[in-house]
Image 1 (tube, helix red, strand yellow):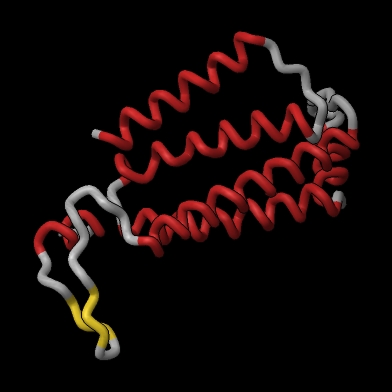
Image 2 (cartoon, rainbow, N blue to C red):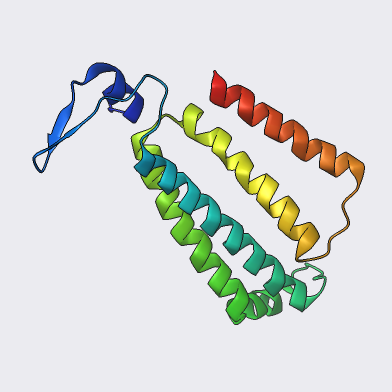
Length: 152
């Protein structure tokens, strides 16, 4: 059975690392290092998405067909912003995978909603995308859901 951070918290006595005793955390709390991993993965994911949008937005709307596919692929793979966005997003995924090795998916995944909130705000403030009340309400519902899952 894979030991998750939660299992270790529940079942392990304090550990000694390099001569320093590590206190046992309360059930349901995350290690600061795991929280940092989540925040790094979130930040890199958001930055990557913003770069991808900027790169693809510079290309304008693309019409996909058998004839246009090779040209679209070429434009994508030669776009520094798109390649950079994929790289940043990939690095964020690396940190997310480390997070998943430490805690249960059901604990980690609600934090993905941070991406929705931050991207929503940046799309509005930086990309000047239109925000209507229904979209804003949707983000609020996502936040409420995240809080409910986090407290459970």
